[in-house]
Every structure is written in structure tokens, then in C-alpha cells.
Length: 321
Ligand code: ACO
Image (cartoon, rainbow, N blue to C red; front, top):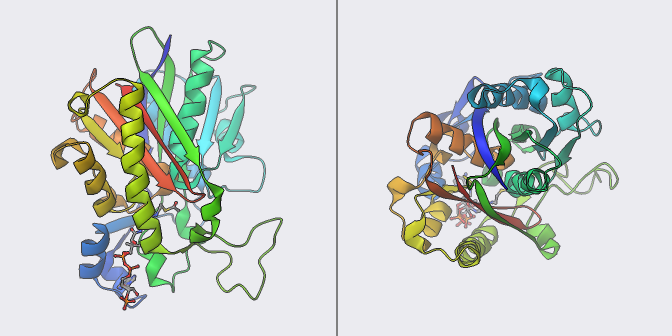
């Protein structure tokens, strides 16, 4: 028994922020952002629009593409770093909005690797036979935890949500998931403040993303190269068996390095970082939905998802659509 993706959906907030708009806020340039990251624009949630709102829209679209009703869902997992409330979980809020009652609903927090973690967890629920219709969502309003005066972070991120429906199948769907973390890198990429620790006044910007970008970059490229090897080896596949790379969308240079490692041409890589920026846990399901709806990724093709983020966390999923 496999778990297979039977539907995809995504949602982006209406407001678009172009690099040119950022030039008016911080000392940056369209040229620098394009050349160093590949980002041209990103979407930003409207005032009052929350992670739950984005997640619900993406979920409705995924259910529609799977031909399922909300009442068919028996498991909801939301990957997010930017929940609406401390509690209940965003998954419970999504459950409420979709008028679903009784099934387990919980959040997974692995920052940019969140969706891969959530997919890995849902895969195990489905394969065990305990659940038959999982809604797996990555949703973020990362704009809320950005310091809009810090040019080294605020130009990189955007808001959005992506979702998949996962159901049992005798034909291969998810072939393997690989989840990793190493907390020793805490300080390289983090939001220093939090509920329990508080937001110490002496830590300027303690409520916002802080990142040592070039160190994160170096470790991300190296680590993603290794996880690609691990994924192929475990499945006894060759690089040439992969049809598509659906990577976390942090930086076009990181994506290109992973594609090179897989000997993939860039037209076999789903790239949305130019249009979405880094939407953290939402980036992979958003990219997947774009490529599926455009008819680029076709049923039966083999794809690899990979992500790297705060923690550090990193992971991959190999699957057949
Ligand atoms: N505009 C103009 N100049 C800038 C900007 C900006 N927005 N930001 C930084 N600079 C400057 C720096 O001040 C520095 O100037 P200096 O040389 O005079 O000191 C110069 O540009 C180079 O800075 P670097 O940080 O070395 O630039 P780099 O080439 O590493 O690119 C970037 C920065 C884009 C952040 C890159 O390091 C990166 O993508 N890192 C990885 C991000 C990532 O993958 N994060 C993980 C996922 S996110 C998550 O989990 C929440």
C-alpha cells in the first residue's frame, strides 16, 4: 500500500510586492535581488488575512482537484511557522473553516522543511491503513515575522499556501521520505524571541527572522546535495530516473546547484521563486500545484522534492504522481 497525491491546490494573497517597491523601503536594488536570489516579486497577505485564510483556500482547491468533499477528510496536517494563534493549532482552525469534525488535526513546525515533514508524517498514517484521506497543507504569513528595515531578510520572503490530498493506492505514490535536523545551527537562522522565552528588549528585532545568509547558503547547498544522493540510493534509482525536481524555493542559485547535482536541465526543475519569493513551508506545495495545473508534471512521472530551513531542518520526498 502506498500513499498517493490525488489532488493539489494553492493560494496566493492578492497584494504583490515587486523588487522596485522594496527599493523604496530599504537600501536595495532590483538588480541585486534578481542576481543574488532570482526573486522578482512576492505576494503579501492583506491586513487581517491570516495563515488559516490562505490554508483554507489552498485546501478547498486541492479537495476539488482530488474530487473529494471536506467530509471525506480524516486527517489534517498543517506545516507552518506563522500560526494564527498560540493555540489552537492552525490545523484545528482550518478544520473549523472546512466544517470537518472529529478527525485528528495538528501542526508541524520545521520552518522551510515543514511541508516535507508533514508529507512524511501523513505518508506513514496512510500506509499504516489507519487513515484514508489526508489534507496536507503548507501555509505561511512570513511577512509578519520580517523586520522591514532589514534588507538582508525582508527582500527574500513572501506569503502563500499550498495543499495536497493524500490517499491510499496500490500503485506507487510516495516512494520514500527522508527527514533530518541538527539543532546545533540554531543561531544561524532563527527568530530569537518566543512565547516562553519572551522578547528581550536588548535583542533588537527579537520578534523577526535573523539569518547569517552566506553561512546558511553554503550549508544548504552541501546538505541538499547529500540528501539527493541518500534519496536515490535508498530507492536504487539513477539520476536519469528523475523527471522533475520540485525544490524549496529559497534562492535560484541553491536550486540550480541541486539541479546540477542531479544532472537535470533547468527545464526539468519547477521554479517559482521568481514569482513567489521564499514562502517557507508553502513553497513546495505551491510549486507543485503550479506545475501540475500547467500540465508540465504529468501522471506517472517521478519527482523529487527537497527542502532546507531553520533548525536546521532538511528533507526530501521521492514520489510518483
Ligand atoms: N540589497 C543589496 N545589498 C544587500 C542586500 C540587499 N537586499 N542584502 C545584503 N546585501 C549586501 C550585504 O550587506 C553584503 O555587502 P558587503 O559585501 O558590503 O558586506 C553583500 O550584499 C553580500 O552579502 P551576502 O549575505 O554575502 O550575500 P549572498 O550572496 O550570500 O546572498 C542571500 C544573500 C541571498 C541571503 C543568500 O546568502 C541566501 O540565499 N542564503 C540562504 C537562504 C536560505 O536558503 N535560507 C533557508 C531557508 S529560509 C527559512 O528556513 C526561514
